[in-house]
Image (cartoon, rainbow, N blue to C red; front, top):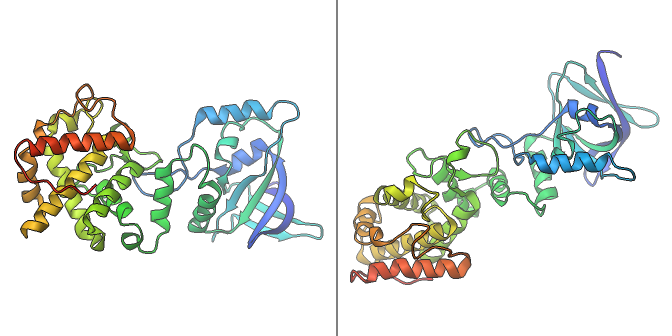
Length: 340
């Protein structure tokens, strides 16, 4: 019928999920599909940002002689308004899509292959899940792409957070890192790169993966994971003090190291030192305590990218940076607890 678009194929199962296997022109599949890219501002979506070069490389490749590709993977999400329906036939099956339905195929695993094929009628194979929810679709995507080269580890971490039933208990380091990024009182508010797109993209200072690994160091040293909510408040207060005391460095992340991996890791170990100091003294590790202790030594450290921490990287670089910061503290005759 002219008011419908038909995708024909074979109805079957991919393990325990119903699918339609078929073939269709690339430009038709492009016109019917969309990539659900993570919008970091709203938390909707789950795909990584489009890599134009990756997509253009595939466009060039697929037009050459003797080339091929594995099936493009889609999902037709449940549609209460009947924009599509599955019809079983004698020799197979077909999906009938209303011509006015727009883009109804979610690109589960074909985003970069299909991105620049809007004008090519070359025939491509496809496999389409039928009726997966957005959550189920994300789970499938995560399984398919968890080891994919170039896929942001921060994006996979965000998926884990979305799929977890009790994130604070299951992965407290990720829970705290996301709190830093989502709390409007945090100096890191919307400045961690989650692997999606954001209106604050140019302001982002570090990745979600970097921050959560640094927080894991803090939790390992302090055992504060037993109360993730309280630990999150300590970490937020600590970074608020850092942003205040090191304002010049905080406002110029390209020229200072406090927002780069080596600085983030070292500073979270400093936070653990101060947490232990407060515990031993029987005091609350709150913003007042942290501000007082940090003000005694943290401004003595040269955090510039041209200073003594220049070029440090990897685990050995973090150890060297931490030793340098602790050295600034001990030179003032101040107590420091050494825990890693």
